[in-house]
Length: 270
Picture (cartoon, one colour):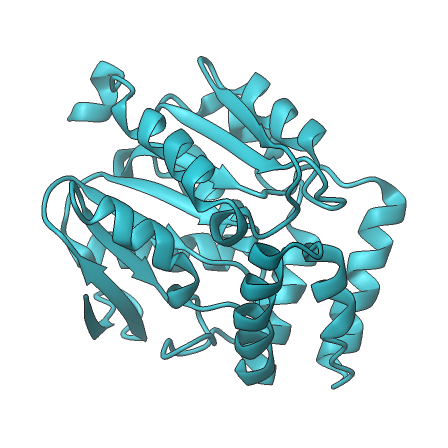
């Protein structure tokens, strides 16, 4: 695996990424508070068959942050800049949580950049109660009140696999740069419906997958998103919550492999 940095052609910002393998490109975008290392099981599996590129979101890992007042469309534009700069042509794009919001936005608005789109533990049109709770958490983070235990308790169960993944995630959350985390979380809090009206425009093979016990990125959300995309598919991982790519990597990778094997629509090949 190669660790490197990239200067974006449009904005000039610096992005850090991990890459491995050769072949058709698979680009991975992590969630708020994480970093590209969170995709380790997917990098190991798919670098056997694909050029896998896992990027650090702005203000996370080694990537330069976006301004404080940025919202989801700014992160989507950032991702488009990343894909243009990579120069790999249209890519298979998968995102987790906030990364899923970004991937969905790019697939809906910049289809020329995306061969296939996969959303892991994505959020879609939260209830008013859930929306207010996430907005309150965003305000706390911006004001320096960092509660790490509450999200960890929400994301993980008590099995050995969950405990091992929890330790890694706790480390990433504990070392993330506060301002970058706050900016991304505010965009995440406000972004659950931003691209919802455009999902019907997604023409590429589409997968929405989540954990059965994820209270915020629910199975119903995954099904709703998939139902809006022509030919869209959804999947639910039984017995798991929010960090399914780490806690159930074999099941998740099997679904991703099937997604990567789906035939492209003719317009996605150009």
